[in-house]
View (cartoon, each protein chain N blue to C red):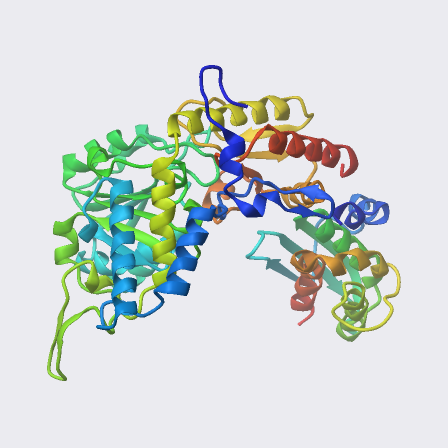
Length: 135
Length: 411
């Protein structure tokens, strides 16, 4: 049940707030709202000449799962382009049970969310915002 | 949990709701999400089952005996709802829900308004009492004004006089806030509206589940509520309007049952309420809602309300002992209903609610379809505890245990 949902690693990742904040001079920014719960994620990215993420920052007004997901995403995003982020997204989708297969770190920690369908969008919202920022 | 001198028998009430006797994952059901949907007593389940098993047929059309049974049950339900509100049955329109009822008024009554006419809402309204008026504004050029709220989550009626204009045609407000539980001073609103000839509509979604309402004494013009929040089935709602208003309002939807005579050249309308009930209505849900209104009318609301307020006090006392828990809304028991929102510093409302679920406690968290209110107070959302007469102290105790656990583990 939910006690298992809030495992220490998820809480720690959310509290770490990796990449939390704003970029002074972002190449692109995007904001995504979840109209069902009101969660809001804003992502800034600075891209290099090849379209790869050189710097990323996020502002999350949302739950612990959304914060943890934004932290996890920020921890792996630098150096990736849109295709690379799409590949990482598969890990998150696998972790929450939307795709078959094993999820790699750090997204494997979201495995407990597979049993909570109503919370899966919380994990995916930062990916949606980043996808918009890279499009 | 009953007040000394009161004889409200919570166990007897609770025993009429079969869903509450369940054990899920080893825990009892502590259902405190009544503001979203209340549970349904045997009286309602039995009424719907009786219709479905002994009288299921369409209404108003057939001459066979099942059709007559269905029609009788449907019209009896209208009469039961009318008695609950102290009005005439022919002033009761069955709709698909509370939202559908507000949309009906916004479309139909709204079509009688002229560009530049004004509708006055409040900052704490549910989206269902905002968006239909915005749609009307887009269609017909009316204007929308907004009464702000006080810091304790009440509609600030001191601001009301300054917002009234000769063009204000309707004031539409939540009777009871679905976020803060505050009840609006209806007398003050009606007096202000009368001074300029405006109509008053109340969204009674959160008030109707707490006992019969004497609409004539309130002096309002429109009243709406939802069946599923008032111990009835889903898919049914009620619009009440004064007969003279219904008489001049054009149809909302067209179809069978709402007509007088149809030709390709011209169609005439049935009188109200039929004019507003196009097509086959939600017959079973209406019958269930009639049973719910009868059930509510038989309840001891003096005892029930005292019991509800005792639970509110217990909840507030418990929350005040939890570091970082803050009540959003009226801090006292006066002029409120048992809907209590709170925030917990450092823990998102969804995480509070998810933790509570692991303790068997059902609450609602988020913006409660009141985003303008959340924006006003710069809130991500709140956790909302909404009570019914079948709740008891064990529900509140389980909730407080869960909130303490969330405070300890999630920040």
